[in-house]
Length: 278
Image 1: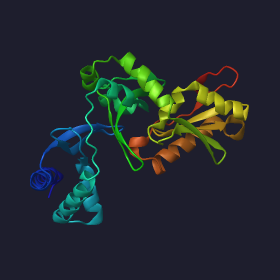
Image 2: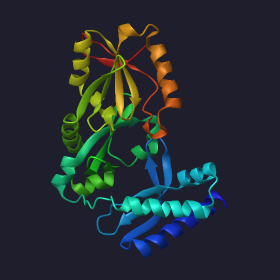
Image 3: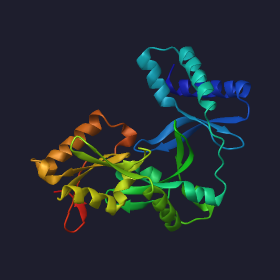
Image 4: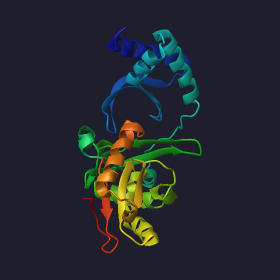
């Protein structure tokens, strides 16, 4: 079976299963933009009333089946079991109320060069080599967070412009910014530990770390979830050493969709300026 045959058959099987076991959902094969991954083929499962539902990465299923030596039938049964479990947890949330939209938007940070296609249809603004994009939190509890990237179409439907979106997303994100210390480094992220790279957009948080250290800092784009801040005096090899560490981490431990950058930045304690480290 080829990948093309696999995705077509799996989409048809999921549709039949949903019609028979979970009526009220629409199933379609769509190309969805993912951070750092361009367009990914997904089986989208959407509640006809709330438009909420899970999505299945078809290529990921294909690769997983090959890696585990599974037949198509075995993978199909596993997908159906996953759907039964997932659909019990899908929140029935409709983002139609404008105040609701306003209170749920947050800032996120992604790599500009790696996400050109996505940036063509989402509201965004530049920040060094990164782009600020926006997410809307559809549902959140102690176990999981469901969110989606805000598109130009969504923003227009909500009746806002990008400048307004930035203002209330900035305030929503500010409430969530968090600092912790780990192995001599400071972690700048959010309380939910997701999309925390946007924490760098709050200069008072970086200044708080620098005040505590009393010196200049290297700022490390650890992932889309967080930045690391390290006192410059603790790095003997300078920015080159830090950049090497970033590249190694990206290749070994950071998930592809969470890679943010490969170069560190420099925070000047006296001036409060952030610039690319040399």
